[in-house]
Image (cartoon, rainbow, N blue to C red; front, side):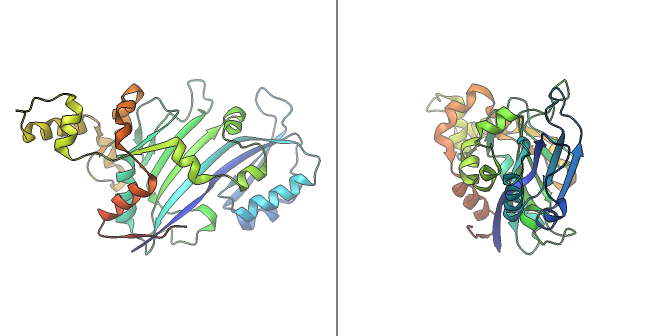
Length: 294
């Protein structure tokens, strides 16, 4: 069984100080999932007259966009981006995608997030999508594993294929600039692997006995292994949500992020693991699947 990995952007939104796109949208369409131009002023900033949204742009799409904007007098700024990572089992292995997704939810702790992770109609949100005033939040990690990959013009049977889709939604000029996203060239050269390593920490849980001992802090030498395992089970059950039952995800889902929100995360540094190590361990638990590195 082979597995491929795709980095890319699920969506980008760019504001222009003109009401029209300076090129032809038809030049972009063959190289992306979809493209949409909306004419209208940005809320609270009349300088920006229209917004271009591009879904699943390929590298070629970004290059065409760069060349058009470079040769025009139109000024632009980024408004939003959805940075995406897809793990795609070949041969339409839906169960493998689900296994990887559940394993990821049980290991991932994103930065810049505060609220409890929730599963809504098969999609996990590690932050609420909008603030109380309906403005989008600056950073939102989104995960699903019951749909096919659309990145980079993937040619996959949408009726049978599934992938583990990991997406980081960034909103606002300041947030984009903190990620080094100022110009189209920054999207083209974006360091995807470095980004994920920095913004999503992964942890490997120890064996039940060791986990129970770790959770207890100091343990009397006379405490049995059974008691330690029961402590570990209670802790995991406390942070297992029944919302994981939606859309074929099976029984409740353990969510490590919900357990480690706030200062608790600091004490877990010794349990940190790399993405490569996490992936290999996940595959080892799925009957020896093989990961083809890009």
